[in-house]
Length: 228
Image (cartoon, rainbow, N blue to C red; front, side, top):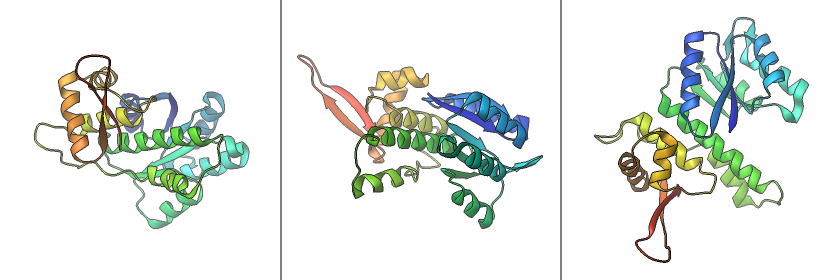
């Protein structure tokens, strides 16, 4: 599980974002903070892997949090996904310079956040898999491409909802074994197997998932799905 700390000065928004994170397979919320000071204390005590970090805070900014953590924690600093209403290029550039893994502009829905979290989860898995080996150019390019995920259509076809689509895609991208069946996706997301199958078929048609057949000793082959 990727341990996530939500940092936002608006308790209602913080609660919504925490609920969003909790719905994404492979992620858990370990705490919420509303100020720079509280965020620094929470990081020291809770040791999160990822910060959902607002730029505007009552006693400073999310950039201040990243600067302090970089100075004090070095390589062990948690990653940060910036979540803010700030749209100016200066804020975006500063977040990039401080090593943020992404930047989401408010307001946004569950589908967009789930997509970014799933991409981040895939990035961590790939980096863990490559940790003990030297990488070539293709592997490096693949790592950088992960944090720029292909977008799911904002208006999916009739009979599909964007939040459920994002949830199914996140489950596929977060599959520890590499692939999942429709039944396993249903179990992880809390939807029916038939619904999971419908959304998985859509992801395959859009090129966002790949269908593979697993043959057993007898009977029909099992349909397995993995992130494209």
